Length: 132
Image (cartoon, rainbow, N blue to C red; front, side):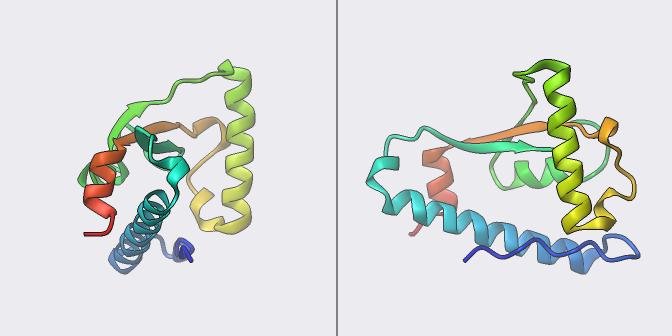
């Protein structure tokens, strides 16, 4: 079972929080790799990735560097539904953040959320996180 991301401490993120977050993320990526390897229907998948509002291409949040260190390439987000759709994506994302980890919205507004995409080839992903 994937582990839940640790709550950001009231005093803000610290080294212990960052290390726990990294460990849990790698654990989750290994579970995804195991799932891909065990499902014949997924053998033709060419890439693994997603979209996040927690990593920016600019600034010093550390998220971009972490994803790149894990082997992902980080790209600007393509807004398939334009600004209107992005508002609703941001509203939903901010609401989830506020509901499950209120400290994470302390310095984030609905208008300030910026999405990025991160991708890695399935072959490279399985080499890095799959069974050896």
